[in-house]
Image 1 (cartoon, helix red, strand yellow):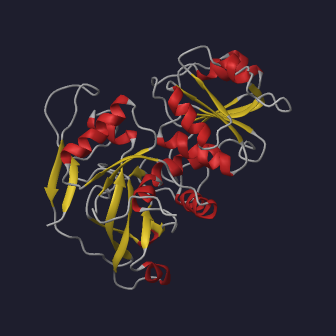
Image 2 (cartoon, rainbow, N blue to C red; image 1 turned 90 degrees about the vertical axis):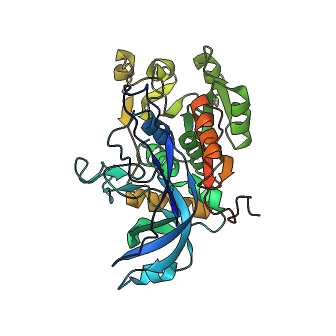
Image 3 (tube, rainbow, N blue to C red; image 1 turned 120 degrees about the vertical axis):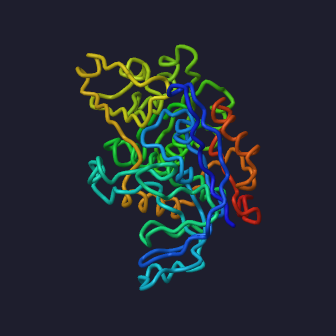
Amino acid sequence: MPYALTVKKTEGGKPGQVYYPLQLNEVPKPTSGPKQVLVKLAAAALNHRDLFIRQHLYPGISFTNPLLADGYGTVTALGPDPSPLAQSLLNKPVLLTPCRGWESDPAGPEDLGKRFSICGAAVGTEVGTAQEWVVVDEDEVVPAPPHLTAAEGAALPLVGLTGWRALVTKSADAAQPGRNVLVTGIGGGVALQVLQFAVALGCNVFVTSGDDQKIERAVALGAKGGVNYKGEWADKLKGMLPKERPFLDAVVDGAGGDIVAKTVKLLKPGGVITSYGMTVGPKMDWLIQAALKQVELKGSTMGSKAEFRAMVDFVREHKIRPVVSRVVKGLDNLEGIESLFEDMKAGRQFGKLVILIDAEADSSPKL
């Protein structure tokens, strides 16, 4: 029987103090119903959300639905009365949309309280990609860009969607040629996707990291420069900005903390700070200097199905390859999968951590 990977509930312990173990389950192979497709998953990828789930630091956890939101696979069967689009996808590689309940509203999910959910170990949807087969609605898959391997395809969905919304939808006019964009915490999946998108759009991208080697790798991917956030870095970054445009148009941040204090003097009047996460802590300071400078602070997370399709089209057009940090083979390789979680906990990764569910799937970059 096929496998599915879940988290196992344990008794005792407070959020942040527990660490739910992984549990491998045998499950029946599903059958697609009307307007659905059956996907044989080839690869799935981890997000920080999955680590937070294991620590009970994320709401709405399911201990029966499979883990993980990111998936790449092949449509192998269609349900009754398939649409022409579904018929065109039969036996073709696809990416799965990583969220449910957000169609196209640029302001936010149409029904946040009742329908919106991220896939993977969630009570809001049964779909998770840590399994060998999955049934989804026809409109919850998109054709995979042909230049991507299975591992690269699995690395894209959630971080690509989050990064696209944070940069393109939320950063006002910063997502265009010649604009200066700061991306914090380079090495994480979202930050790297923002970097790749911004470089493809012609922006001047600068990065922060606590690891100088990660900064060097970001420069190799197209960043103009970077600074180590373990020191006083604001003045150093100011010296890197182009003389003809000596300010930041936008900051795309996933850390929080003192980012407003660090960047307010560097941002142009009316500049934007887009916050898609707060790994430093659940709060951040807002300064009067930012208000006086008309700086905008915008919250951003995930994105709509329409934004997902636009993002995938952009990746296809510009032949962007998501950065994969490490791959392990086999959904039943619990030791290997645990090592991916250990990489994430220690912050060792540069890019995405991927499980190759189909050991025969190609994880080496295509020419």
